Length: 267
Image 1: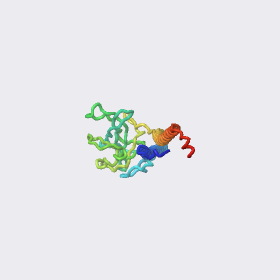
Image 2 (image 1 turned 180 degrees about the vertical axis):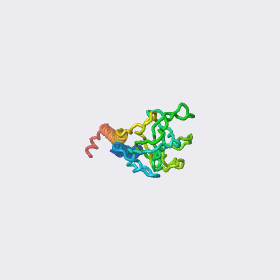
Image 3 (image 1 turned 30 degrees about the horizontal axis):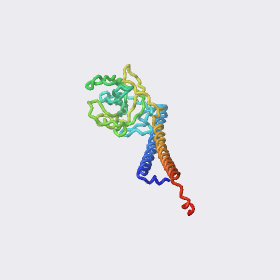
Image 4 (image 1 turned 90 degrees about the horizontal axis):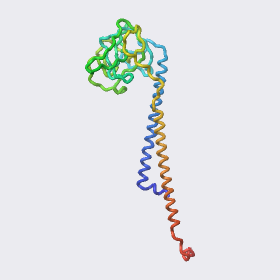
């Protein structure tokens, strides 16, 4: 009854299913692992954002990347802004409005510098103009903010492009190190509070969302449903084909002429 499965059409169909099902299952696990990473990422944001701020110099070091478990950790640092070496990070949007992040080195009492992302400013009317950037306060300030890792092309996907002087594509303590006359602590800080706070300042970067898990779990379930549905479809087609063949054979048996009496007697 099932010898039809050895025909080229059914062999090709079975091979296609055997190829697609493992791929769909693997894609489901890939999306599930992305969901797990997102959960861990959100847990890290939630845990570190609730901890009391600590002095940045106690957990950061010159030339050392920010450890992963310190991301979003709240820190404080006191110093004076080096406005001469201020940088504008390109292609940064806020509320779907394109603009720049204003990154200013803060020089501490021991001579080391920490990059501070003071906030966001919108793009100027034309590309040839410089955006309107509220100046950093003069004198000693105390900054509180969230630790962020140095942006790399691999991690951020931001490409290297030729940009006007004073602008950068990525925020990194390593890339501008040769241009600054100070040792730079690894990572940078997203400013959340500042004392004294100037009357006019760049717009603060919004708090990170530690509740949005994205669609990854739903995608994982969808891929697994597709894999099961494909197998179920193949089984249904096989059973349907077998039933049709069985019905055809039964119809042939009914249509076959009855044997003659002499032949029946011989039998």
